[in-house]
Length: 49
Image (tube, rainbow, N blue to C red):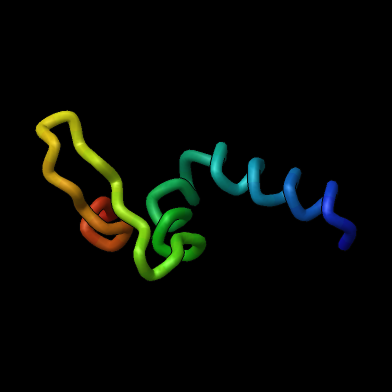
């Protein structure tokens, strides 16, 4: 798979409602954090609940 195909595959997976719940858990780096509107950060696993 070339770079273009890998990026398109990643975007298609992200856009799939059935896979979105696990997308960030499967693709986030260990230090990844969402910054919620409240200002409280949450990691990828916490966002999947």
